[in-house]
Length: 133
View (cartoon, helix red, strand yellow):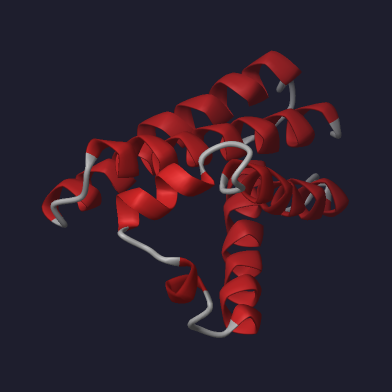
């Protein structure tokens, strides 16, 4: 894992929280996401925020490190990093979520909202990792 900028990996992982905070806020898709999941405000109060955010942070760090490892070779340009991140977000994460959601009988809005978040999150991670080499 020589050549990986670990500060960029941490920044890329943290970016998923910034994007998620905006993406799932009432300003963007928060209300539609709640409808797609049949959630109420009371439902969102259940669970441990420490566990939810802690594990999400670990998962985001793993995603960012994995993407950084794929981009860890000489000659990677910002354009290539963004393209690879977009392909990863759409082709792997988004479609993988879509397959699982179809078998769970989830709505298309559920797939679009959550898959869209993953695509944008990967895109921004690629921007960070590609620019901060």
